[in-house]
Amino acid sequence: MITSFLEKPADSPLMPIPETAVNIYTPKNPFPAEVMSKCRITDASSPNYSWHVVLNLKGSKMAGKYRIGQSVGVVPTGRFNSAEFNYAHEALNNKIRLYSITSACWGDDWKGETVSLCVKREIAEDEETGELVLGVDSNYICDAKPGDEMLVTGPVGKSFLLPDNPLDYNYVFTATGTGIAPFVGMLVELFNQGFEREVWLVFGVPYSTDIMYNEEFLYFAERHPNFHYTTAISREQTNARGGKMYVQDRLEEHQDGIAPLLAQSDTLFYMCGLKGMEYGIYPWLYRIGSNLVNLPDGLTVADIQGLSRNAPEWSKIERARDRKRLFKETY
Ligand SMILES: Cc1cc2nc3c(=O)[nH]c(=O)nc-3n(C[C@H](O)[C@H](O)[C@H](O)COP(=O)(O)OP(=O)(O)OC[C@H]3O[C@@H](n4cnc5c(N)ncnc54)[C@H](O)[C@@H]3O)c2cc1C
Image (cartoon, rainbow, N blue to C red):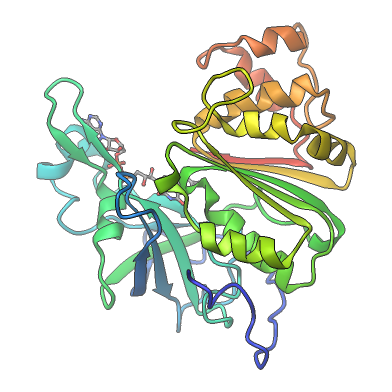
């Protein structure tokens, strides 16, 4: 368990949450951040190799200036950024990829002088040739060793933040895979500021070996009865209809507690992770008649239940969400 960042040490003051700043460092002017530490956060037997990586921001203009919900860019350098590894996607060489910030704005050192990321190695096979293809940036980051330097840009993003008065709201956080990253820091920020309202976290992964930060969430759940933490393990658990257990199935299972909360105007809903989660969560929100989503012209709730993933109607649905209360960061 990575406990040091969960609760503020008694002797250090709590820094105020900074104003939102973006693009302090750009691709033309990146900051060389030293890798301070890294640890594996999926079980050693999981093929979804994922790492928690702590970067040193000391001396940078980003120190104490980033907010949870933002992302940083990492410039891919090193051996994967070569034709040998990136042959099929040459256009992607040198292209900066974004990674959600995992640490609260206070960092792991409670001074904001570190920033943490949670990165999964992307590994695939070329469809035609069957050759192994390694994601350029994710493997570069997961291979990095303490002491290595990494060029970072950002922070970026203004639309997936906690509100200015975070203690005045309830939250429903939904995540798949590395989409869990921002919720770690959000929970740290909320509980360290004395949060007393209700917060749910529904976390979906394929196998139990893929659950990240489980001990950290259990740590908060044991200490805060207002934190409701549950996982949806699609390849191991079944839903009420005998199908795979996805995030929306877990939301449905806890509907009696979550739906009335969501009906309140002071409850915010966040989803982060794989794009595919939207195709399950939006239909569930329509099924419960949630006021977070309006019905687009020409569509019924029944139509939305059966839409295929590539249906053009999804763009209308996306536009019909309440942007002040339903926040999403999917990739
Ligand atoms: C806002 C935002 C936040 C994000 N946050 C996170 C985060 O917190 N953690 C995280 O891990 N990721 C996050 N991502 C995703 C991240 O930005 C990268 O997209 C991801 O790490 C893959 O980048 P890569 O360079 O490793 O892979 P790339 O080199 O870009 O390749 C992309 C994928 O294509 C595959 N591929 C490449 N060539 C071929 C081929 N010929 N045939 C078949 N497949 C091929 C690769 O294996 C890989 O799976 C986020 C994305 C966004 C937009």
